[in-house]
Image 1 (tube, one colour):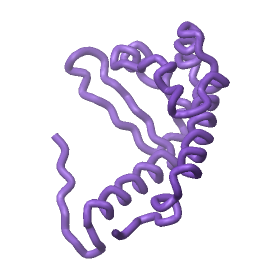
Image 2 (image 1 turned 135 degrees about the horizontal axis):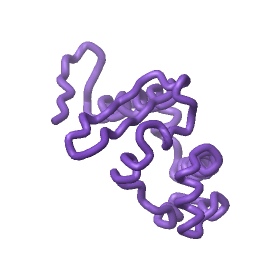
Image 3 (image 1 turned 180 degrees about the horizontal axis):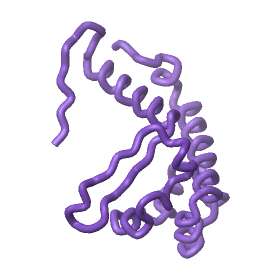
Image 4 (image 1 turned 180 degrees about the vertical axis):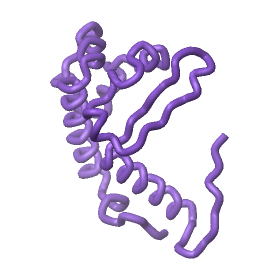
Length: 135
């Protein structure tokens, strides 16, 4: 099997879980400090960042649902200043307010790597033509 990023994709399970848990802890702390909506929602659910130690703890976090996106329209769920976003996606708002999602450079880089990994894992190789269709 070919890999896009062998260092990560062939990581043994123990170190992989450790990496996932470390990154999850950092992400939860980051969101708690930067997004008032999440801080309030998690406080109301009785959850603090220190309570999230591993992926096993994810069920402790309340869901963010589409109404939350609309209630915080347009930018109140962003963890970075709007000026630091490099891409915005917005729905048409046909069922109410549009939903807006902003992406940082790091978000786009991460998404690109995830897509590349999945394409290589499914057998795609340089030089192949493919169509990526959504809908």
